[in-house]
Length: 145
Image (cartoon, rainbow, N blue to C red; front, side, top):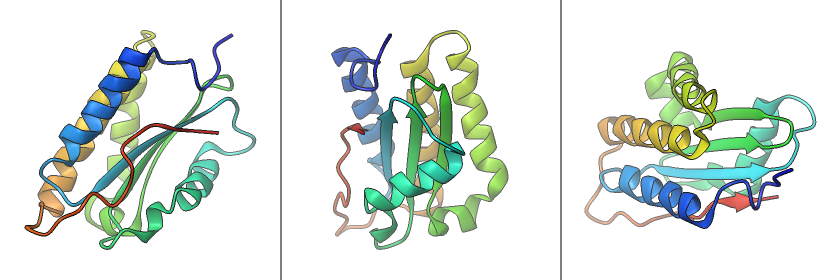
């Protein structure tokens, strides 16, 4: 049975990180992906805990987005900080999640994440365009617990 650390191949992990970097090219927004084995409780609540643990709530414009996946319990959530949430609204998160889930149903987990990440990048670019003095506030690598 796959664990969070070996759920994606090294190539898939690299492709997901590349999608994050591409999505962040034209925005001050920050995107992270976090994997763990199981989710105890509600996936959105757990994603919120991970969001805070990764200090994603400390970005200057409060425009971070977390993709949370618990591989064994098959839980998935997408959460955004208050800055981006105020711009896109609740329906956006559902549509991004659904976009990924369509691919997940076909066992295309990496591709589903990449597509959803790039969609988030387009929204972040619209509301939080890159600034001249922008710095990458958060690590782009996949995190695990």
